[in-house]
Image 1 (cartoon, rainbow, N blue to C red):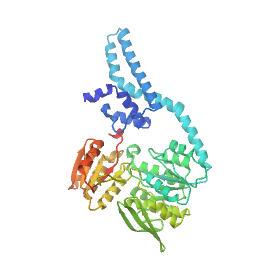
Image 2 (tube, rainbow, N blue to C red):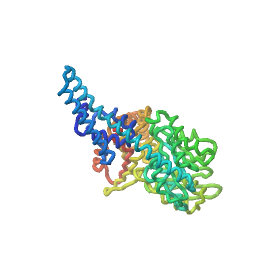
Image 3 (cartoon, rainbow, N blue to C red):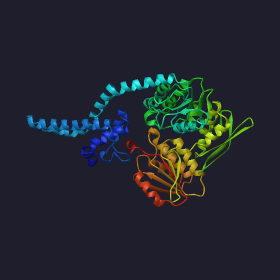
Image 4 (cartoon, helix red, strand yellow):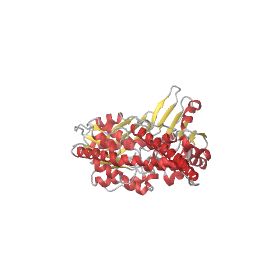
Length: 477
């Protein structure tokens, strides 16, 4: 307890505060939430480190100015003060100085945001809105708690076989990120695909006002970001702001997700691993080489094969194929486009090392639906020993315990041979779920992910399959 308290007085405390601001993307609410739950500030920078950006260095300078101002104030009180209470006042300054520093950094950040950042962002976003309004491309908006990036990349790959397509890079799914992308458009693009990020109620509506989609895809609704949304009802309402904006225009909805399906409206086009719209899906297969299935309708059959792994990918692939056909692509173009879809970085991405161990990197998958899908895929693999490595999921709010126990039960039912758990506030619930389901395999515990990863070569042999599920940023440690 004393050691944790004293960590507020070490030389790295200020740098840790600025790092917390950086990692929170200078969101004051997220920064303060992280700050209040942190006990030991000596271990804040674990997964990543402070980056010396201009903004970060400015905040460091301001922080040191606050430190020297507090020291100067304390010395002045001792030097010129005559009251017998001056020592109590100095002790109060020393005691409260870590908080003065932590909250003091917020003030210049607010000034920078109000005086500089907000006006500049308004100009950038407004110019982007006007430019996009005059753009003749078909605009597709994608909203959902999970699967947005995967759907965006599948659509981009398939539609690019017959159209000129552009999408924002990486996870540019905010007003400013999308606006920066819009600045790069040449004007001759035929299709623009936007991933609409949702972190707080109203986010999707604001993004729709910017990108003005002419059709949409809702990939699903679950507990991702539940800590911020507080309830699933608010999450549903926010994600369905896309459907509200589109009205009678086409909206594709993931029928495999309960909340998305239950909140779909008349006229919405459902997709899952059984059908999409009026197309039926037959002969679905998946293994470590990829996924295949047939689309059939009124005697017409379209055989499709993708390098993506897991039967849960069939719905998005089929929806992309139907969208492409509706936009004028030929069967051959759709077939070629689907064949070019490859596993995406850190999303069930297979890698084989020199020892013959297959690693499935799913570290960007941090939602319950995704976890359920990859456990099902692991369960389908035969004649191999399977490892499941996880620190658990973040931002599950009041359902944290329930969700993680369910993950444990799913792993037990799938008979996964080895479960490796990273110690933190949620993985004990996974262990409870495993034991409640009478898990017969082995549970291995590690203090942190890096130690677990370093130990894997000593635990695995040729032919083993290792699934890396999710990655906790430092603010969730």
